[in-house]
Structure formats: structure tokens, C-alpha cells
Length: 316
Image (tube, rainbow, N blue to C red; front, top):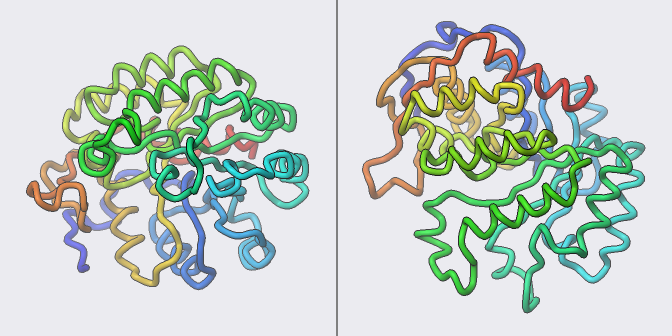
């Protein structure tokens, strides 16, 4: 899909380095393309969530480029061999990882042949989080999906619960695991304007809580609905927010990466109004599409969410 840009890259206000705090790799060749496009946007480092067991090739090709996160998927977390999973935390750093990744979403109930998928606050996970705290391993965690998913995919509350259920379950975990450093993906699943008050309350309540800005279409769609309110929230919690686009390096379609980097930088750096998202947002394709309304954040705030916060979290 050909991009339709409103500004040239050279016109973007922020010219400093960027840390992409939420990216995935599933294919080595596609990772090369991700890096090529990321370089275009001044992304010098990234958190790379690895879908596989061997990171040696990435380490050799890209020394000092990535912080690696080991992906403890639902297939692993909800298995019968959980003791083995916990033991892997003790060797994460010597295996080259600096972070753990966990994923709790309603769809696991569809994918796994178990009667009841345990929730993030389930006591069986206490030892996992206790071990993360003991080993000083931060975790990036997915705890919820867009409101649009709950109207389109998860409408049966008997099967999937409610979004409020999932957010509350995670807050229960925050209370139980105050020594764990959390990076919660997707603005803690609360970029929607009507959820931002609760998001602010949680950020105020839990000092070990950080959030990232993946994914691009979700952030653009929701944060731009009330520019002033979203801008004020980000400025207030500028020390707790990390830039990330949530790309998965598995495609050789250059526009996939380019469109997401460009969209988020437009969102955070400009005051553009009603600029079409340069790729299809499946959640709004039948509702007129998604448009970018820029938040025009101060440069000092951009420096934190683009670079400084990630470096502090990872002690770089």
C-alpha cells in the first residue's frame, strides 16, 4: 500500500535517537528490513520480543542494537510444566535476555484445550512474578485488547469476560507483585478516552507501572479522539510512558513498518488534523477509516518517551 504522507521526515520536529520499546521478530530476513526502516526514523535501539528459542544470530548481526525479551506465550504459561517455565527465569540474563514477555488475552480460551484459562492474578503465577522480582527481571505484559475487539470478537461475556474484568485482574496482580517492574503494552489497554481516568488512577497508585504506545493504529485511533485530554495525560505521566509500535518482523512489505513508524511520530510530534492512517485499520474499515490528529507534545516529553524512559528501565 502506497503511503500518503502529510509531511516529509525532515520536517518532523524531534531529531534525537529513538528506542522502540515494543517490537517482535519471527523471521530473520524480515528483521533486516525492520532495522532498515527503523534507521530511517532514527530508531537506534529496540526491545525485541523473540518468537523462538535462539537469539545468537541476532546478537552476532546486531550487537548492542536490541534488548531481548523472552516470550512466555500462553502455550507455555498455561501448560502442565510450569515449574520448568519458572526455572528459565534464573538463566534469562546469561542466555542474553533482559526482559520477560507475557500475554494474557481472551483468545487463549479459543486456542488451548483447557476448561479454564488462568487469569494473570491467579495464585499459580505468584511464584513466576516473585522470581522475576528476585532476579530483577522486568516484564512486558499484554493484559487487554481494544474496546472494538469486545464489540466485534469478544461479545460473548460468558466466554471472554469483560474488558473491565481483565483490567481488574491485572490490578490485582499489581497489588500482589509490587517489586516487579511492569511495562504494560498498549497503554495498559486504556488509550480510549473514557478509560483514561482509570489509567491515570492506576499510574498514580502503582509506582512500578509503566506503559508503552504499541500498537500504532490503536493509539492513533483512540488518543486522537480528544487531543487535549490525551496530550495532558502523556505530559503528566511522561516519565512512565515508552514509545513502541508493536511491529512483528515477519513480512517483507516495507510499507508495513514504514506506515506504523510514520503514524506514531505524526501522532506525537505534529498538530496535524484528520490525516488518513496510511494503512488499513480493520476495526474501522467499515466506519470511514482512522485518521491522525497530532498531540504536538513538547520536545522535552518526546525525549523521555522516545529514549530516556527505556534507558532508565533497562539501566542502559
